[in-house]
Length: 344
Image (tube, rainbow, N blue to C red; front, top):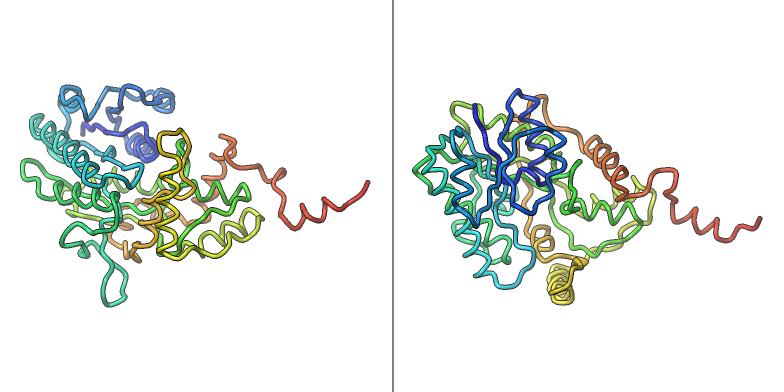
């Protein structure tokens, strides 16, 4: 089986590469021109330029390909201009679908998000059947993800499988995206946050599930990939205890979280700095559904990785990258307070 990955140099992409190689499949790894490809070069996998703004590069990347993994769907970095965000998202995905169809790609595995999963009205956990009938009015991130998934599922020129992962955690989050809250807590910083349902999953499990989807004769049309759902406040308190730091403090109300995120994005606009709370993170938490991902769990060889083991793997990576303190240098706030009053 010949495969090409779009977004191979990203957090999920690197872990998918590892999963495919472990399964005996060497993927062609597509990346934008200015992307850091050092982790891919170290894996000695074939590289190719695959820029969604340059369709001719996709034609080359997709040549003689059976399965394309599309991990490079547009990710809005701010909540401004949702109409422009959706237009760009649809345009980029249309370019990918056109190129895949022109290259006679057999299957495209499109990676979406659990942002497209609707909450059930009966209080039960949501499954693959729970979708929004139209774009949810939650913000630019949700609107873009819904529009892209809707377009992907409507494609009839080739087989499209949609995978919706929850909050991916684990090694190789080089840009500190999903793991930003963990990094903050581990460094003793209480991040401003709302409360709501989150569904973390080991990124390596997602990679293995995606690799498995490529090999199935009759894969599910849409599959959710997530571990056990829990409230964000409970997760942050668990992390604070794990790293021996102060509790994260009370969550913001939904309205206050949205207002704070909007103000933060305005503050850092046109600067290299990050918002203390990004709007898409606030929206994801506030509107997050409790997930029943039993179908997706069956796609992971060996079963899902326990959260504690996922965090162990993240810690090893993050300490190697010096993102979080090592155990011997970390000090619980109560110990720090006691030591500050000690005399020699």
